[in-house]
Image 1 (cartoon, rainbow, N blue to C red):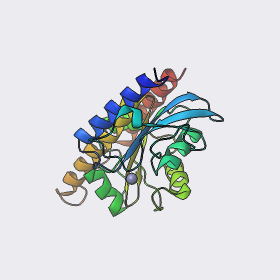
Image 2: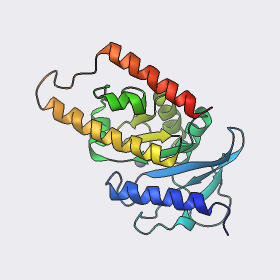
Image 3: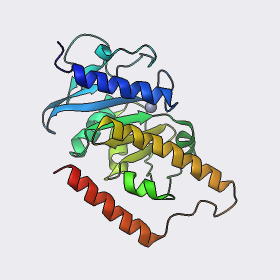
Image 4: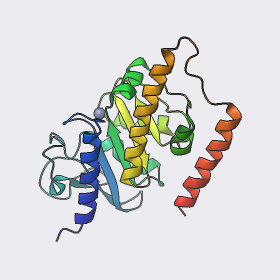
Length: 223
Ligand SMILES: [Zn+2]
């Protein structure tokens, strides 16, 4: 029996759900979970490249080490593996990374607009607004560095002219973050339809209170 069979089934189920919700095209986006180890040494399970989600099998998910090298023969790991690795390196609290190309969030990324904290659940689950970094080529080390830096301690970031990255303690958390980013991006676009000033951020004092709750919950879940 495969040592990582349970983790393969879980990541596979999350990928199916990500595709079913329309957060990615069949060949786009990717997802990973931290299998074991710390920031110096460890293993990840990541989606393969060039495999449509509707044909993906759990055993085709790729185990890689923290330099991105596959641990066995088979399909090559996602072309965005460097992005996942950089986030695991810089965020000890993160055990899962999901990257999506959902429509409204990608539209915000194309417009170069960060999404301000406009609804409470953004602050509870993302830690505030969704930041955006500078443009970098897909799959590059530069993109990995820019995304991790722009995300900081938030749970999501927009990749300029590209898409979304969401992170979490487990794969379903990261998936729900990406889903939330898509929904708030949609709200952001619709609010602008009401005219200038249509997308009002939450009051600053409320954001501060909610950010404290976000930090307290993060700390509690990583004790
Ligand atoms: Zn992408």
